[in-house]
Length: 239
Image (cartoon, rainbow, N blue to C red):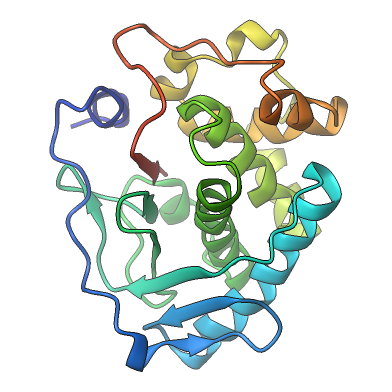
């Protein structure tokens, strides 16, 4: 079961989506000291790193998107996550409103970017950043972005707030460059190479910082195959 099949199935609604996580337990939630992020599960180190990256993500939303991101977000660390029975690193489901990410000590899914790059707290935090970005988009501008636009923003946020040394290592692995043409920001590229899509989204923002405003304001709408439609309930990290 390849990544392209998984992404296509998830987008088209023709496959079972994420396996349900545990119910949210307010009594077990740990609030971050500086931001309105509540965390269930994980170790003390997981939670400290998540609080730190959450502050960076919210600062990016304010500076790059002009959005006040001072809204509650719920994050759950899990020992196992899957979409359509395929292990993944994290996901955000709009209908439950919880960002779910593998705990740092959980085994990374085989064949994913996470399993191919040396595990580090910084890279793990980037996965958290990606899912928090989805949660903030859902809270601040619900329904405004189609699936690809939302992934473009989430990946840009993820790499923008990542530790620079780790980010450059990842960029070097991909021979990072922007999308040669914005027509390439489409479902076909995302389905076949979601990780490359993410790297190029970030590099495109570096080259054209105004593209995030264009996405949020609807001046640029990524092309989506007609059978996929938008917006979608599920936002998943396929890596």
